[in-house]
Length: 216
Image 1 (cartoon, rainbow, N blue to C red):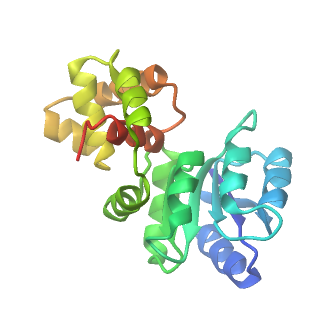
Image 2 (cartoon, rainbow, N blue to C red):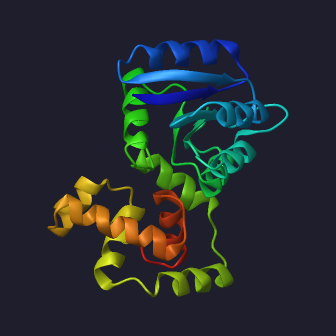
């Protein structure tokens, strides 16, 4: 059972998302929050696997909330909710540790699929839109590029191949097919990549890959 939390200052949005998630036999909404500060309190009181977090909220916005949630002893995975696919705040949320994002008008079936994917360890939902956000708002300067290149240097050539595909938004299954590997081997590579780069999720690894010029 996936334990979910819905975080949004709009009561109707919270109600709609909660009804949607609770309609899935494998998902249980264990908490709701009206803003980021409330979300941190709720996540500290309940075990939450996946939190759907709005970006724009009073008291504490979704970016700050994501950072705080990911710093908890048992951090939930975070899906950022936004109204616009090119919202400048989305990149900041990804950099803060979000595992992906959804548009609020996403098809309900896709929202459920997203929760399952993120709960299972995948990230960067809607990869084409994610790439647009990153490309538009992630302008790496020379210092950051140099640091990123230094951080990926310990990776083996094969791990760099995996990281490059990960940065394009490929799932483990996609990477396995493209690189002619077993999916279990891809998972092992991804785990070592995250450890070596000292990042918390695939999104942050993808940002480093782009800073380092590993992918276009």
